[in-house]
Image (cartoon, rainbow, N blue to C red; front, side):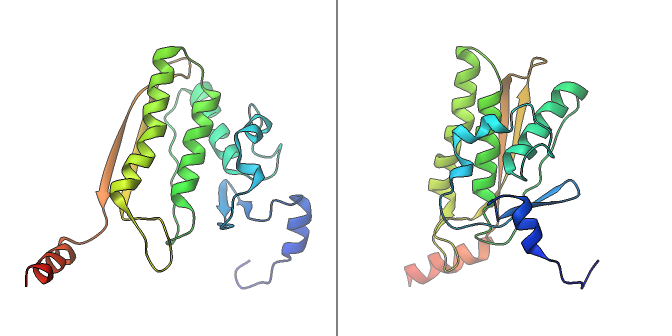
Length: 181
């Protein structure tokens, strides 16, 4: 109910210490804790593998597992939209999803090479497309659409990354003209 006060203490107890993620229907709401947390490490992924969203506490890995298993079972394309203000953790959430998919999908050496390319593209894109801002030390200055193609067996077999610049060209022109004068 909009405008009503919500008792987060009961929700916090239910989630046993994971205080920054909850579901609203099928949507995961996550708050950036601004620190490294144990429950986002690789060894935590196994807890979500093969589980439904409601089997464990709300988590980005549960969303990734649900998406991956739906793709395999229903043979339908899946989509995740990550949205939030600057510093909300969108880039990190995307990394967690891609890391989870890389971990749970099978494959041999060729598949591992594709996984490596997908995962290693993040630092490269960040090096050229991120900047320190007042609100975020590693602020993405571009939007990113990542498409990962899978074989019928659920192994990544290709992909596409499209970048969309968020800054206006006029801002860049002003910077260059100021430096020239």
